[in-house]
Structures are given as structure tokens and as C-alpha cells.
Length: 225
Ligand code: SF4
Ligand code: SF4
Ligand code: FES
Image (cartoon, rainbow, N blue to C red; front, side, top):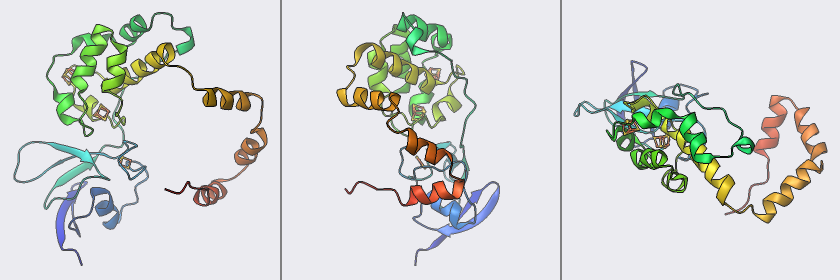
């Protein structure tokens, strides 16, 4: 049996098993997470969490599904962080760099404080990819931001009030559209979809209710590892 330790969630004290993740501890405490929980594997970015421990004045961050509880920690999960997002149609963009700069002019207000890089749970050099965006080096932005899981934490800390991950995803899209070769198998599948090859299956799914969809999902074929 694991030892129990106290944690504080939503301003209330709970006793949870030591060694469990924040996500499991909150569920152990009786919460059913509808937001702030997704893949449980550190990939989806839904469970960004901020916390403090009594021995340290600094705010700490982590993914709730990947971070273990600490005795007497006070925590909040941030299932979403307010973030403005530019609207664009890649097909209509002729000048990718200009489009990025015009969509997110706030990148030029970056103060170089590095708060974004320090907070990123993926250890991404966020400040550096913003600097690359300022230089118009889309390839570098794409390379540096590749592991971004859109958790939102960098936006929560940015002194220039920007949303770095939305800048990065636009840069990756622009770079991919202009420079990457489209794989044959993807193009084939797009053609199949456009020709209606999966129409019956899609119509069948659209006609199902939530419970039926859940059952189909639970019984789906999963590739063996
Ligand atoms: S770059 Fe920002 S949104 Fe992406 S993983 Fe890091 S902190 Fe999260
Ligand atoms: S937190 Fe904002 S202002 Fe500071 S380095 Fe990162 S992008 Fe620039
Ligand atoms: S639940 Fe997906 S990253 Fe934590």
C-alpha cells in the first residue's frame, strides 16, 4: 500500500497516494475530469498544471499526467488558456513570411525574457523559435517547435502577451506547404476520400449516438506493439 500525502486542489485539502500522478490523484480525490485530461501519455497538452510546494517560492509547472504529487503542493490544472489565433487560408498565401508577420505582429514585441522557454514542459526553446519567426526563418521555427503539444503554458507567462505556440503552428504549416514533398500515400488517401470511398462508413458513424460511438471506439482495432 502506498503512503498517503496531503495536496491542495481547488483550495481544498485531499489525501492521495504518494507516487501517483497529479491526474490520478485528482481522480482518486473524487473528481471526474472532463477538461484538463486527454491522452494521459504526455502528448495532447490538455493537462497543463501550475503548482507550488511549501519549500519554494517559485511557481512550478508540469503535465498532470506526467508529474508526481508532492506533499502539501497547491495546484491548479489549466485545461485551456485564453489565446487569440489568426485565421488564414494556406492556399491563398503567396508570401509566407509576410503572412506570418502580419498575422502575429506581436512577435516583434518580444522582450527576450525567456519566461516561455523556462516554463515549457517539453523543454522547447520557445524564445529562440520566436526569434527565428522574427527573422522569417520558418524552417528553424518548425524545427525548434516540432515537439510543441499546445499546452498553453508559454502564453500564460509571456510578458509581451503573445501566444507563441500559435505563431509556431502557423510557421510549421507555411513551411510544410512550401517546402515539403507530399507523400504518395497521403495523396492517394486524399483522392480516395474525395472520390467517396469511405462515404458509407462516414454516414454510418454520423448516424450513431454517443454511446454507440463510445462502444465502437472501445472495440476498435489497435495495432499491436
Ligand atoms: S511551446 Fe508553449 S504550448 Fe508548446 S509545449 Fe511548450 S509551453 Fe506548451
Ligand atoms: S515570454 Fe514572451 S516576451 Fe519573453 S522571451 Fe518568451 S516570447 Fe519573448
Ligand atoms: S492528458 Fe494528454 S498530456 Fe496529459
